[in-house]
Length: 209
Image (cartoon, rainbow, N blue to C red; front, top):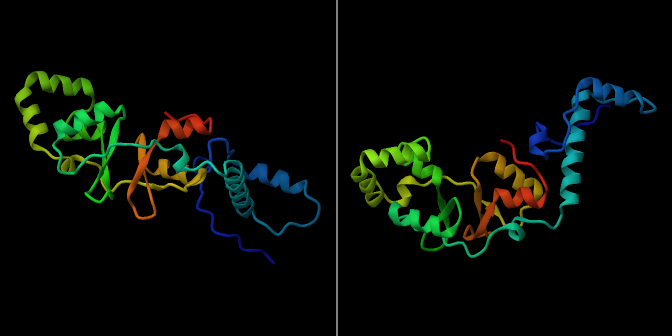
């Protein structure tokens, strides 16, 4: 009787690690021919087993490396009521490309990034933003002085728990294109910032372009 496999949420190799090979039906049928005896299993079942085994192997290999261990601590978050001109200085001083936005209790509300500034100021890139500034510095200054962080930040934001392992971190970065994400405790309060570059460097992975 054909056995039902557990649900597999990893539909492609990108969700389970950059080194996983995508199997064709011919690959699977050839492998099955080399296994003695009768196999009551479809190629899709075989593929699901392969994905699950690969995911389990990654978790086993990278056990102990968590978001909490990789995150940057001591990150100074932004207040939602702060104006963009002050927020821009804070982000520039931090050395990051963006910072988490938290309320008075430390709960993460969103992220404010360089991309959010471009969107808010209706520019595709920083060269276009520079041209806008040269054309109308008053409008640019007015926009930054009058707009608060809460009006420009990205929300809802993808966060991750401090105990998250390799697969969970990889899945989280696949869900959004940001360069970093807030790491939160079980109560949702900010603990640190996980940078995409640090995650990929820790596992010696190459970022897709």
